[in-house]
Image 1 (spheres, one colour):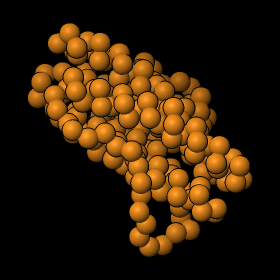
Image 2 (cartoon, helix red, strand yellow):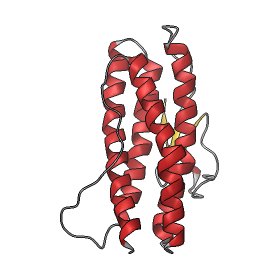
Image 3 (cartoon, helix red, strand yellow):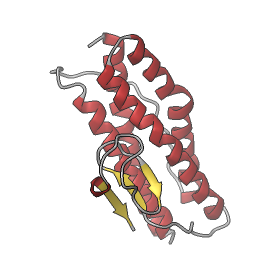
Image 4 (tube, helix red, strand yellow):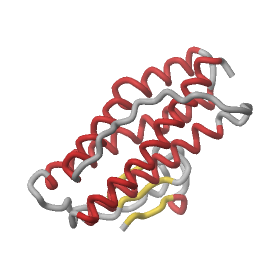
Length: 182
């Protein structure tokens, strides 16, 4: 694997791993503030970030040893209003800067597996941002967001509100491969 794509995978793994843990922390805070649907949203998206991290990690099977991961992460946790703002900032960075660049580098370097992993994550992060923005509107009014079931594809992390599709639009996984957060 080309060095630049390899480092981008390492960095993406680090960022997705941090997002996974950060969103679990944010979910616990939302529970404490009596925002159960917002907490459920954080847990669902945390699981999607876990899937993304795993996809990136599996592309690095050829490595052995310790490596430094440089990744953007939002810090300064607070109440749920602040935590949603931090989540939106992180998702926005992935959508506007990180994944578009990583996809182009992997494509240029002919790294098909890395490109696929980056595309799957990129395709999902837009939905994460939209769901967090929906929750932010309600939480800013001191109200919990109204959400139906949140479905997460266990193969690529695709996330949507409502029922699971018959086939994942990103990776074509079956309906049975979705995990519902109700």
